[in-house]
Every structure is written in C-alpha cells, then in structure tokens.
Amino acid sequence: MTDFTDKNVLVLGGSRGIGAAIVRRFSRDGARVAFTYAGAQAAAETLFAETGAEAVRTDSADRDALTATVAGRGPLDVLVINAGALVMGDPLTLDADAIDRMIDVNVRAPYHAAVEAARTMPEGGRIIVIGSTNGDRMPFAGGAAYALTKSAIQGMVRGLARDFGARGITVNNIQPGPTDTDMNPAAGPMADTMHGFMAIKRHIHADEVAGLAAYLAGPEAGMITGSMQTIDGGFGA
Ligand code: NDP
Image (tube, rainbow, N blue to C red; front, side):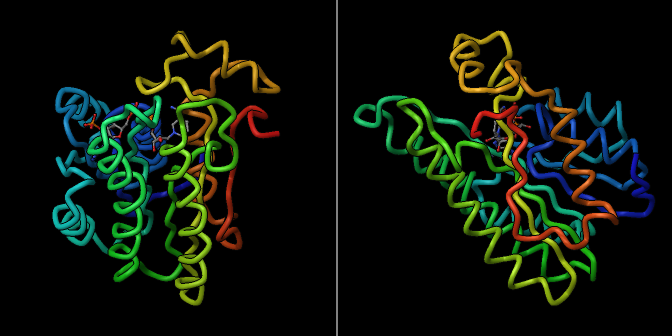
C-alpha cells in the first residue's frame, strides 16, 4: 500500500478492466479519485458505489470534452490515461473509420489529456499512460494499427518526460501483456495463442497492473521518467 491521502487522481477510462482496478487501488490507498467512461454507465455506477470515486462521462475521442474534463478536475497530482480501443483484423477489410477512432482514443487523446493536465499539475506530479507490450512486439497478423497506436505512446512519453521534467513531473508508459479484462478475456479464443508467446503462461491480473501504476505514482518512483514499464509475463522477452 502507498499512502495517497489528499492526492487528486483522474483515471481516463476507469469503468472496467485495468482502469477499474487502478480506480480501486488509488481509492483504497486514500486518494480522491475520479474516472471517465464513454458508454458503460452501469459499470461506472457500480464502481462509484463501491469506491466513492466520481464517475464522469467523457468520450476520449471528443477532444474538447476531454480537455474540459481534465482541466475541470485539476490541478491533478496523478493522471492515468488508460482508455483504449482494440481493432484487429485484416487491414484490407477493416473499417477505416473504426481505425481512425482507435487512433483518436489511443493516441490523440493521451497527448491532449497529458498536455492539459500538465498546465496546472504541481511539482512531483505523475502522468501514467497504459500502452501495451504490442508497442514493442506484434507477433501475429491483424494487429498493425493497434501496434501503431501503442508504439506512438512510446515516443510521446519520452518527449513529454523532457518537456515536464524540470518541474519534477514524471511521464511513464505501462506496457501490459495479455490482461484478463472484457477486451481480452483469459478464457477467450486467443488465450492459448497469446500464452504461447509468454514465459509465464497465464493472463495478467488487472490488479497487478494497478500495483505498478501505484508504484510509479508513489514517492519512490520520482526518478523514473520517460520509461517503458513492461508487465507482460515475458511476452516480449
Ligand atoms: P476494457 O475494454 O476492458 O476497458 C476499457 C475501459 O476504457 C473501459 O472503462 C471503457 O469505458 C474505457 N474507454 C474505452 N474507450 C473509451 C473512450 N473513448 N472514452 C472514455 N473511456 C473509454 O479494456 P482493458 O481494461 O483491457 O484495457 C485498458 C487499456 O489497457 C487499453 O488502453 C488497452 O489498450 C490496454 N491494454 C490492454 C491489454 C489487455 O490484454 N487487456 C494488454 C495491453 C494493453 P466504457 O466501456 O464506458 O467505454
């Protein structure tokens, strides 16, 4: 446990999966937490009832709404940018609009949200993006556009770490491997294929990713910045 009492935390995309685990972790550790979601109102309400974290409906693909939500919750001690979409398949037949929306949510939104948060973030603030091990390795067909979005996060995190480092703000990229969520269920049809690429052949628990986020947000991680923190059971090893 890390003591986040009095810390103001916003998790973008927090209603389900990894984001919900991060909301639970920071709430349990004493932070004042809010989270966004785009569609899953019932899940958001359940998480609010469980944790007391405020749920704010904001589609990350809507830049004006996103930056207004980030600015309205500030100054933030911790911004976690988790909201993400996954569109996979044959690039020759995938819907181009769905690809562009994924790029909006996975790339454009993290950039604009991070910059907006940094306007008022205090000394020692933390910006954490949830990328993917697929930013480093895409070992099967059909994931080119998704990998594109997660590789883009790597460059962004390195650059923003330079931009905000003088203020003691760290910017880091957590890169999970297969993690048991609605997006990638441990019992899903791709599970055996994915486990075949891993040294430890099981899905990661969302709580394990949340623990890494808490570490990066905590006082011991003040000199970790511009880094890729991979938690993938050896998927990319
Ligand atoms: P889920 O689909 O299980 O949950 C996604 C969460 O993000 C939901 O709370 C969803 O809310 C929110 N969200 C999605 N799109 C938007 C949007 N446009 N605006 C606001 N909120 C949004 O995904 P995971 O928990 O599995 O994934 C979370 C992150 O981790 C993503 O960035 C993903 O790419 C990354 N990741 C996941 C891995 C995995 O194996 N699960 C592996 C590596 C990386 P709502 O339902 O309301 O839209």
